[in-house]
Length: 451
Image 1 (cartoon, helix red, strand yellow):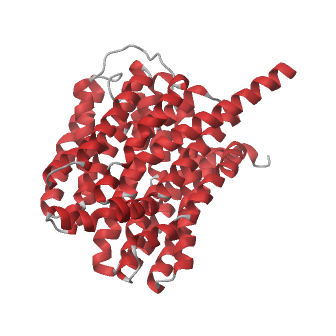
Image 2 (image 1 turned 90 degrees about the horizontal axis):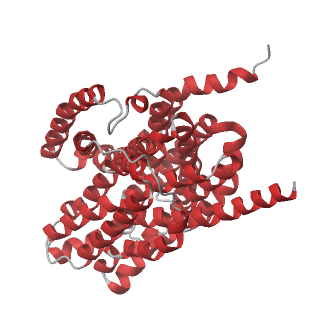
């Protein structure tokens, strides 16, 4: 008995260390967007482009972050987590250095593409490593801590970016993700090796990445114009049937048929997308309103900083709650909190009142910190271990597309009805997520109904 207790304690201590380190890596990848957004005005002036054009450095980063997640997930199924994560961190670091020293705006865009493609390794491979290494309550705590630390670091992104820009300039802000190189050695031994050893379906990977890119571009088109909308629609219209044919021809290829037909994976990922939609909407909408009202960028970051503390505390609740009520009901609770966050943000930005705005960010942080580990736990339990990586990659892809929806709605619809109105409109997404989750919620509650 004592030996069993000792083993459990060691597992908890190990999960705490590993999840903290992977959460830090995840947060640094997210900071590539949250900190860089603060530096856009100065960057635009220095490189001689408009702020609207400068926003492409965020859009392209987010695009590559979304479309390559599934690729990393599938590669991890075949060769394990270590090599893909090393490749991704190396690519992210190289892109960050190139962005910091970019002599022109065009070079900066290319650097950000590589940076985003590298950063995409962290979300999928981080959760895949935790899902493979731990089980039961320990896994729930580890996933919750991963999401909490990632959200905390991302919450600090605007403040860190504002301070770094003020003291060292916008180029130093672009270089912040290179800190991930310092974290990797400490987590290397904990990463699972192995993999099935099968060959990668390269054509399938290209088709999925191209179709995913079309979806993200189409979502972002309200802020990018008709040309981007046309490109996105073309990629999506051409790519979707080709992906379907490829899956039918190669049911065990890049996109396994067992994952595509898994209703739990698809429903959970679509429902969970409301959480990053709320988060990205606040990252864009709140600074836009407050800076227009006369706030300095670092002051906006300071207002968002308390949410970083909340993010660190969420895992203490998220893990036990996930273990007690399960992934479906945890996602439902996170959806309700996300809806409240958007309504509170709409009120705060309408009144330009810092208190409701800060509370809205706190609610969004709690929603993210609860929703993401619930999604990962549900997806991990719903598929075979041989396809867990790609299933997590597809779920993360849809999860990140939700972030694109949030930013596009605020930037696009915000120009028509105002940012407060666009934030209020986004409160509908979590409600839709609850409706999508209804079959899973009924299935969970049925065993507990009185006979």
